[in-house]
Length: 391
Image (cartoon, rainbow, N blue to C red; front, top):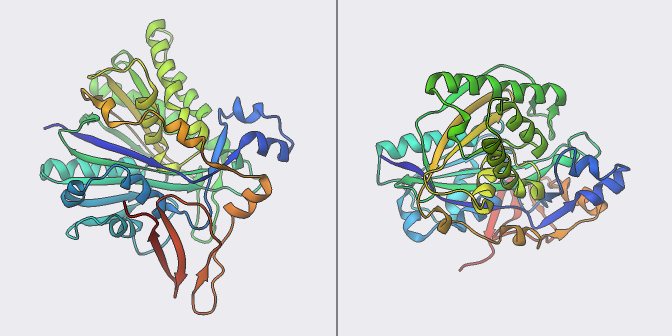
């Protein structure tokens, strides 16, 4: 039975911080960001745009009424949770008008969680072939003003509809996972920003890739020549490039190296403009690859490396379905260019604004640009979301 990604959508904020602007304010050379990190711009969210609004917007763009009737599970992966108890997927389920007899959950394991969600969805559809599962990765990467991670921040959501007979990517049964108990990146409940051991995290990312790939090769007798492209978790594109180079050994032909490198360049185009979106970064890379590569064809095998600090990693693959390109957009980069640019002072105000609750747990917000949905206000500690359009 063929199971995989039938539709895929993406949403980000309406505001952008160009890294040239940030570099000037921080007294840095722009090459430190554009070459050292391979980043050009960051998506910046106001307080009225959060993981729920972006998740709903990313999903709204791909779902038809027939999908909403067939979806019986909504999985939202995030490490930017808005409630310690209520799953963000419940808000999304309501905002989208999905039929009521559906399971809605939120899952967490740093940037890996969306991959776990995709696996869960695949198993569910395998058991219930007529069902559809909506898997969403939605996050806001926020490190702090003048922190080392500041130029890698970002925000966005990737929504994937998992079904039988998918029209984009058929998932293979070749997943290899690895878990190791480490502290490379973590955020305790009492902190609004994460703690990061940057050098250690980079080493763990690359070592997890190397050892998981080795196990994948051993179990599946696989070689890199089988893949037309390889997508990676992208904390920042330069690290993913190091990952690709880690996989390509000296015996690999120049033609294969060139193909993998060319497709890698296509897979980071969106991340260069958006920044880190944690759980969704791997799948934003996949979307960027599919919408921009000129060499991929039906049947091509695509490798995917998922990594979540703490740490869990996984390598798996999928094959492109004939006609996959009809399910994608061709103007997404143009859409990203339409975001409103921020000065550094405006970015510092907008991105770090927190709700000012009164004694009854109420808060109102200034008017900001958002996507199709917005966090309107907080009433007695309850988050009130609205849909801004009704097309």
